[in-house]
Image 1 (cartoon, rainbow, N blue to C red):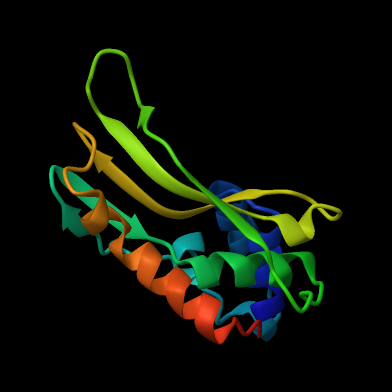
Image 2: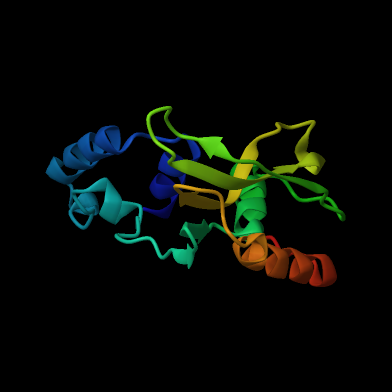
Length: 157
């Protein structure tokens, strides 16, 4: 089941397509697939709720720098180099013209992967109807994690 779950994540299989596949496998008379869940969210261990942190005047969710970097290497199935170089960018992004709703994502790119592929990843994201009042509060988790990783390195499993 772990390899099927990894496949679905790696190839970004849509939940409705995965639900159909699970129904086919579950309906098979073989006992091998009888323990599979019928829903893709259960199968992929999708969290039911997202734990956000209040950063006035909105909310912030931290995906994690370590988690994003690790996911890239595992997804590409390559061994990381001795030194990983990351670049980070933060900029406001209005969602629609008719509202002041906006995102402030913390985006990263792993420069060590540029010869394989250069995907931008989201380290954290703020949503509110105005920019964060206190950028120190907004960046707290990112700065703490980046400082720790810079000092202690990163372990890719």
